[in-house]
Image: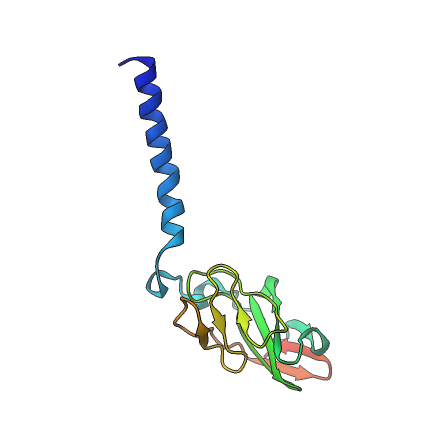
Amino acid sequence: MTAIDRRRALSGTAAITVGVPVLAACGGDDTNAADPSASTKPGVAGETLAGTSDVPVGGCFVVAASKVVVTQPTEGDFKAFSAVCTHQGCLVESSPEGEIPCPCHSSRFSLDDGSPVSGPATASLAPVEITVDGDSITRA
């Protein structure tokens, strides 16, 4: 085998090795998604997640370290869900826009119950029990 043939063979192998994981990350559906409850921290009761002023009315606030998204669908009504998208495990984003957005594949979830509103995700975000005491939101 000549040096040129070897280079071509190695280049082709490298392209295949690098290309397969990239293509695999682009496809798929919820059936291949990780179990959202397995990828979130179990959390500790009493863990402070946010202040009530952090969560916009009609929006959501993500506590990335705890992998929790806190919503306020209507004034004074706070709810929380896993912040791990059920499609492929990306972390959803904070938003004042009336839905919980996932930046990876444009899934959007309901502020009220974490159910999918649009996008490739078909499973709801797992609920997280919280307590609101004054202006503090903690994990129940």
